[in-house]
Length: 65
Length: 331
Image (cartoon, rainbow over all chains, first blue to last red):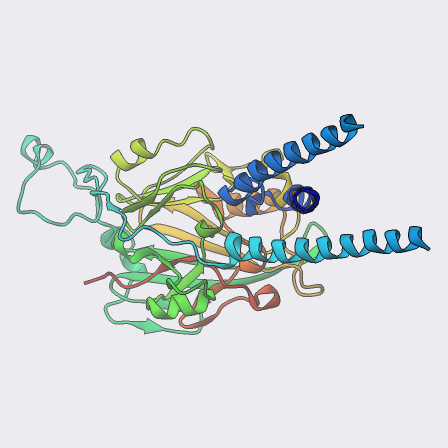
């Protein structure tokens, strides 16, 4: 279970860094559609799911004690 | 000691995440803009709309029109071949800066001048054609994006410029050579109709069904529009991210059968610094165009003429997904 949450946190961190990167480079070149494409849409969905999972895991850890 | 070990573990953990992040970015880049985007098969054929009053290419006299029956003495609209007859030649004549044949005439001029306090070099290809089929577009090969010169050579282009890089966008309109490949809209859309007229439709006003019904022959979805009824535009706030000095590719329209390609070199200190969108707009007003439209510029900005680069591309150009070119009519 611990390993699962660790991987979940890693995925969340990587996805967050990716979306932040796309958001910044999109400011400089919006014509490349770094944010408005089906791959990024998929990554955003995955990010939402992993973020929710990570947050629930953290809440569970905090309330367990 | 235990605390230090834990700290190192955390740092190591972050390092692994950083490497995975870099790998994920590379994978994204491959699927986003390195791997060629497939264009669906052959597209959907758009029948040309024949307007007997304005279509200059129609020289068929087998079927008299209502207009002719009503008043046979009424003057017929001259064909493009008649209207621009002094530009064409009976045989193919080529020089370093011109190409003339019975079907098309292209004159390429290099201009170097100071614009806005900086040296700018740009090229204007003045184009006359007798038939809309001379005005064509081509995609890169299915195996990948290619330099403009390669696509131009494969299609026997006389003069060619980089297009709108349709493949990098997922939501733009793609009508090429009278075939509908993709419906959509992102920016201002330039439409070339089968009767030779060109129009720029403001973004969000574009309707695929409407332009298809009107006989759209080509569309380019990049922008922005550079002229308003032949007058220069100064407000490019919607395109602020690309409004600065850059190498530029653009297309101009005078009247059916008469067009121009404009290529501005840039980002090359001492040779050419490029133009802003406002300066580009003013340039087209000076050229006397009715419509003008900005295409994919920057490192993509390349013009080829008779199998060679006409301009001096920034960093030798880049591989692109599509070109606009003039060629002899397809038999």
